[in-house]
Image (cartoon, rainbow, N blue to C red; front, side, top):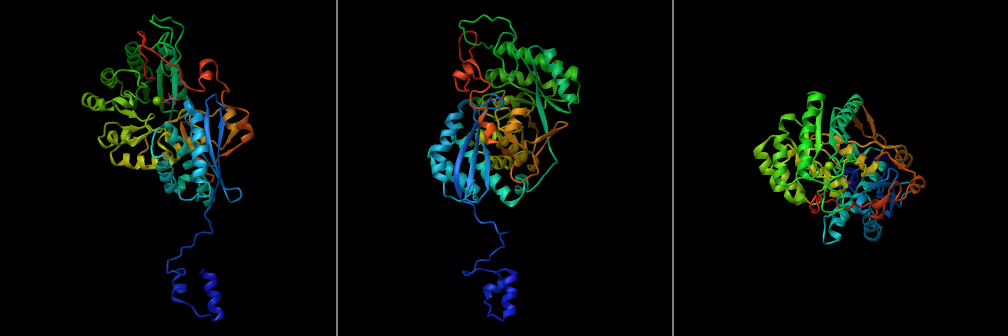
Amino acid sequence: MTRRTLLQSLAAGAPLSLAALSGSNADGQIAHPSRGMPSPIIKDISVIATAPAGLRLSVVKVTTDQDGLYGYGCATFTQRAELVNAAVEKYLKPFLAGKPADRIDDTWQACYNSSYWRNGPVLNNAISGVDQALWDIKGRQAGLPVYQLLGGKCREAAACYSHASGAEIPETIDNARRLMEQGFHHVRVQVGVPGMAGYGASRGSAAVAALHRDPVFDPAVYMRRAIRLLEESRKQLGDDVELLHDVHERVSPNQAVQLAHAVEPFRLFYLEDVLSPEDIDYFRQIRGRCATPLAMGELFNNPHEWTPLIANRLIDYIRIHVSQAGGLTPCRKIAAFAELFGVRTAWHGPGDVSPIGHCANVTLDVVCYNFGVQEYSSFNDRLREVFHGCPELKNGYLYPNDASGWGVEIDEKAAARYPYGYGEAGRHRDLNGGWDVIRRPDGTVIKQ
Ligand code: GCO
Ligand code: MG
């Protein structure tokens, strides 16, 4: 019974029950004023498949039974986008249609367990799309940005790093300087390996001898160049800039121990993915040998991967790809868990995360006390043509949108102008956005 009806009943001299006076409903439950927010019901779930920047993005749209109330969520696994989209359309849509849209963790648990076999990149990304969309809906319904639903800001904006690379070291250092002039205090530096398919930088034109015709990569050659790159970067860029480097699991476990130790004098902000998920037990050896800060996690999509590393303080930064872990709901729990062990966040933020996914990243960045740094990749004009309301970068800091929900509207007509395959060529297009093989000179396939 609202205060107004109570006063009307009093004025009318109507007999009043104890329940009415105590504001509880008929069965004695204390009825809290619910700001008139009827529970929205999931009416439809669809996927917006678009590639404005030449990377296949999957964005889930959850539409409710309330006019104009819908939400978006990132489900981007660009190397297997079609499989994620099918998981959403064929499995999550029939499973969730007709269910309430305002019970986010319950819905997450239901989706997570509905396949019996769980975790893994395809199913987690699909669940993430729905999860993030439900947070968007709750924010839109409440008239609040999602960061307010999570308790509000711990900081105004998220310090970001961007990528400086080059075929040769001087080029990388020049590009790093340019980013510093734009206000970035954190810069990731990568250098190519001549003639080889290195990570994060072009290979130049040199020819490399190999026992096969596939792209080549030699970890030992890369390692020597990476050490020189970081030495030169620290020397030429000075002490103030925070330097990051991504090994991208391209060396053997023992080389990883050597590399982390060798770059210790250059005081990195962190060394990323020096090991692959299959070799995380080697972190103990690295910890035993040096204090180089370590970041890991973009490849993780199972709690068995991140829990021991965090609980045993074997890494300093958890770098999960939010949709690979299943969305905002699990990642805010991972962040809280990491805070207990002094591990900070550095959510994965490359071009194969949609602008909605970047909204989820920066939301976690501003609300979680144990924020470390945020990877930034710029939103080109075509992305902004499709996604209105992308987070804004100012002076090396990323600011969440203050509009309700994620504060992003998607122009679906524009999205359709950039279908999957847009901007792709050769094998990349033949492989539907997947990656081709890279081998060591002797022909051994490498982890990329
Ligand atoms: C990073 C990552 C990316 C990944 C890419 C895979 O640190 O940003 O390593 O560059 O390779 O997201 O699709
Ligand atoms: Mg990486």
